[in-house]
Amino acid sequence: MSLYKNGVFLVLLVLNIHGLVSGDEVNLTASDVAHRLKQVFFVSPAGAPVFKPGLDSFSPLSLLSSFPEDLEISDHCSELLHLFGQRYVAYVNCLIPAARPVKVCQNCFSSYGSLWEIYHSNISSNKVGSGNVSCRDSLLRSDRLMLVYQLYSNLEDLWNTAKCNKCVTAGFKSLTNDTLHFMTTLNKTLSCFEKYQQGNHTELCKNCKSTYREVNELYSSIEKNQTLCIDIEDAMNITRRLWSTNFNCSFSREETVPVIVVSSFMLFLPIIFYLSNFLHSEQKKRKLIHPNRAKSYTSLMNIPDKLS
Image (cartoon, rainbow, N blue to C red; front, side, top):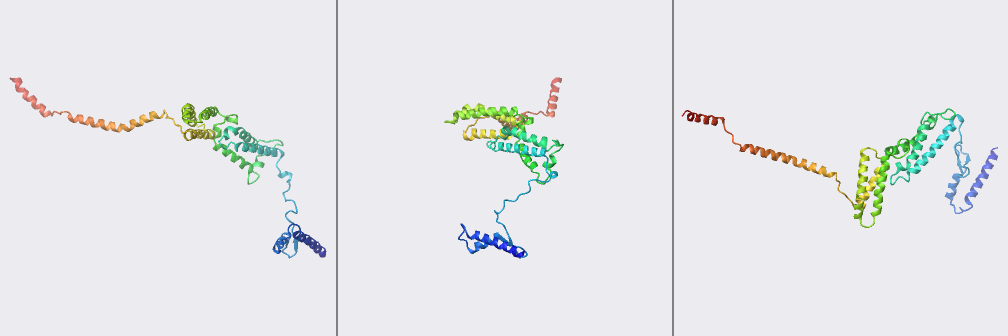
C-alpha cells in the first residue's frame, strides 16, 4: 500500500516539475525552481512530503449558503432588510450630488423620509409581520457589529447635524413655508446677479441692491426664529460672497444709524455731566452770602433813627 502511495506522489511530482520548467518560463534559475517547488508541496511534521495544490487549483472557498432554519431570519425580516438596503442606497445616491452646493435637505427629504419610515415603523419597532414575528432583535441585536443600526445611525446623525427638520414639515411631506419663501427670494437675487454680471459691476450693485437687501433681511428673520437649516445657511454664505467679494458691492445699513446716534450720546454723556456740574458749582461761588451778625448790626443802627 505504501508503495502505491509513493508511486502516486512521484507521478504528481514529475508532472508539477515539468510544468515549472516548460512553457513560457524556460529561463528559471535554480532558486526559482526551488521556490516554486515549495509552492507545490511541503513537508509535514512527521517528515512525509504532502502535496499542496496551487492557488488556482480550486475555486475560492466560501461559507455554506444557508444555516439551519432555526438560526436564519424569517422571510418577512429578509424582505424588510432588502427594502431597507434599497432605500438606504437611494438616499445616499441623492446625498452625493447635493454635497456642493449643499442641498441635502431640499433635494433628499423625500428619500430620507422613506428610509426613516422603514427603519422606525418596521425594523426598530415591536411591530410584527407575517408569522407573528418581530424583526427588531434579529436585525439589530443579533451580533456585535449591529450593521443595520450603525448604518442608519450615521445617516440620522447627518440629518440632525444639517438641521433639515427645521426646513421640512412633519412627516417629510414638503419644505416649510419659510424655506420656500427664502428660496424664491434668493432666486430673484441670483437672477439679478446673472443679468448684470457682465461688464461693469456698478450697474449690478445699483440694480440688485433692493433684492439683495430683501434676502438679507429674510435670512436674519429666519435665523432669529431658529428655522435655519444647512441649505439656507450655505446658500446665504455663497450669495454674500458673490456680493462682496466677486462683485465688490456694499450698501449702508439703515439700522446702524440709531446705533451710531445712541453710541455718540453715551460717549458724550459723561462730558456733559461734568461740565454742567462745574458750571453749577461756579455759579454758587459767585453768590454773596450775608452773615446774620451783619444783619443784626444793621437793624440796631436803625433803632435811633426810629426814636428820633
